[in-house]
Length: 133
Image (cartoon, rainbow, N blue to C red; front, side, top):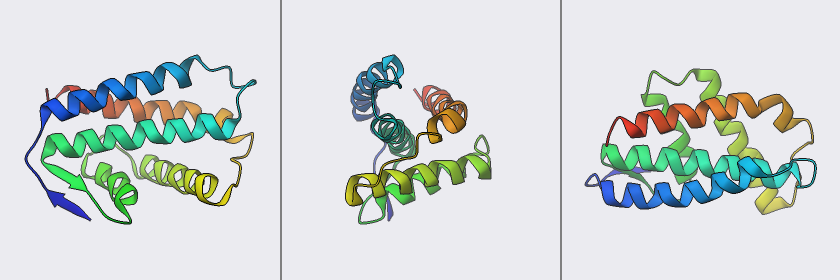
């Protein structure tokens, strides 16, 4: 569920710093040496946290059992994201959940086929967030 909260730039900045640490790991990782599942999970966490920051800066917060799903859907409020990008982010959410909660690995071909599109989603989120500071 998405609820109304007071926009909080300080919390958003703090969250951004944590994302930078995750990005350092994932962007410097040698994909051939680390499981694609771990890398994909980190891409998802970056997207989810950036979407959370975007919502927070707009004065919203996702809570409850389907909070992550709601954050991905929240991105659709911005014309910068195509339906295909929302579907991709949601697909990554589903794959990440299956990995974390069912132990299912993300297929080896996923990242080589989706990495550029995932990075584009991340870049768009960062641009939107920067415009709000």
